[in-house]
Image 1 (cartoon, rainbow, N blue to C red):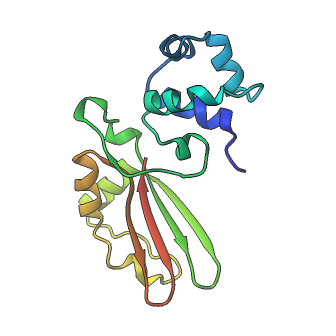
Image 2: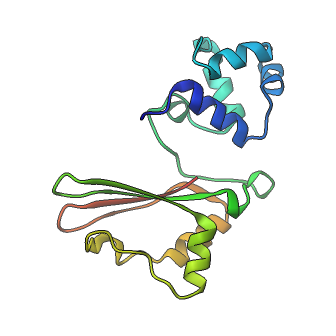
Length: 163
């Protein structure tokens, strides 16, 4: 099921650690108006969308659901804890299969530390060349969003995100 604007907006607001009232104060509206957006009872005025995307630290495309994540470096003081982050692997196979795997980043990090390898999906060779230690190091340095895209010779596309 596709995330509604209200669900996405609430998720992004909570990720920033803001209450409805705090966010409302930042743009000069009531917390009740923010609540209506989150409940999909109304939508924000087009004129404040840019301000909202700045406050929430996302692109307009991501705010509006057109883009899952942009790649960006997050300053140390704004970074989430590793245990609150999710590694997403999206595979679009040349046969038309679409697979999405969501794993808590700490599970991936602990698995790597214990010598486990990432599971192969249906023998998908595009995942074999990905060094997940490098992915973890990039995230620890503050990189979030789409970390990498791998296109295989067979026409498969693997995209790795961290959110």
